Length: 195
Figure 1 (cartoon, rainbow, N blue to C red):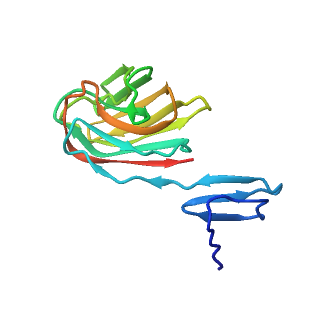
Figure 2: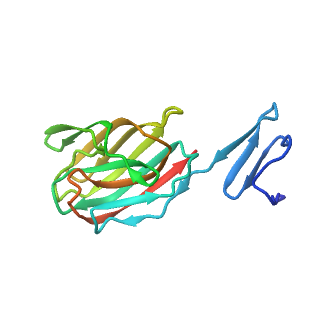
C-alpha cells in the first residue's frame, strides 16, 4: 500500500481516477474525472451533562449537511422539557421551529406536545434519564433543517420530528430546557457531523 502526501489542501488540474485523503477530508473522482470533496463522519467530544442550564457544541464546519445529537442518561433537576436549538454565528436560534414530540409509556399512556423554540423532547419528569439520538439534516441550500429522532428510558419512549429555517449557515448546537433555568444533573451528550 502506498501513501500520497499532499503539501496543499488545494487540488490543481484534473485529478486521477481514484480517491485520496488529506487532513481528514476525502477527495474523489468519477469516471468523467469530476472532482468532489467528501467528508468523513466526525465525532465531537462528549460533554458531561451534570451541571449548567445549557450545553453548547460550537465550531461546526460550514460544509456540514447532517448532524446527530446523542444523549446518554441525560436528566435535569426540574420538569421543563429538554430542547435542542441550532445556531448561526455562535448564537442559538429560538424561533421558527415547527416541532412535534409524543411519547408512549409501558401502560400505553401517551402524550404529545408542540414546540416553537427548539426541537423539544416530550419527557418532562426530573426523574427521566433520556438516552437516544436526534438526526438533523439540511434539506436545501437556504439553510432549512429537518429533524427526526427517538429518546427513551426504562419507562417510556419519546419521538421527535420537525423543521427550522435558519437565518444563515449553521455552526453551533445548544441543548437546554424550554424554561432555560432547569439544571442538567446527569448523563453525557455528544454529536456526530458529516458533509
